[in-house]
Amino acid sequence: QVQLVESGGGLVQAGGSLRLSCAASRTIFSTNVMGWYRQAPGKQRELVAAIISGGSTNYGDSVKGRFTISRDNAKNAVYLQMNSLKPEDTAVYYCNVRAAGIDSWGQGTQVTVSS
Image 1 (cartoon, rainbow, N blue to C red):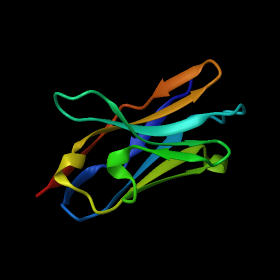
Image 2: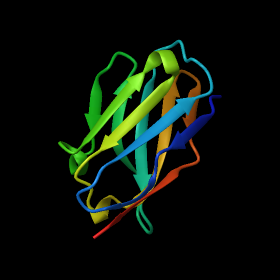
Image 3: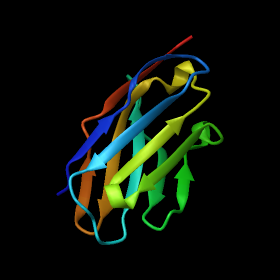
Image 4: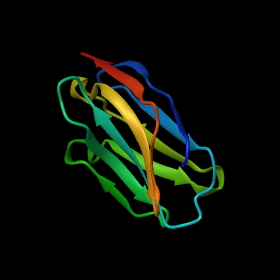
């Protein structure tokens, strides 16, 4: 498996920005997808954004135009730039990587957006 460590969460006012980072413990040589999911209290975990190793991206409808996912394959890292944050973005954000035989999750980082 692969260990993932997230960082960058915190408290921000509505309209503000945060950048989340996630570092994998090793290189994954096969085609893989790195993504961010979030889970708010009482709600199911949902996809925020995902990026495959070739660079194609996919976003949840609620964050399109506000969030940007990127990755640095040389650093085994994925990032989530979050702009124009809203109180409804408040959740624990989890990093995920999927590849052949791999489905790993980070421990989560709290993002709280105050109104």
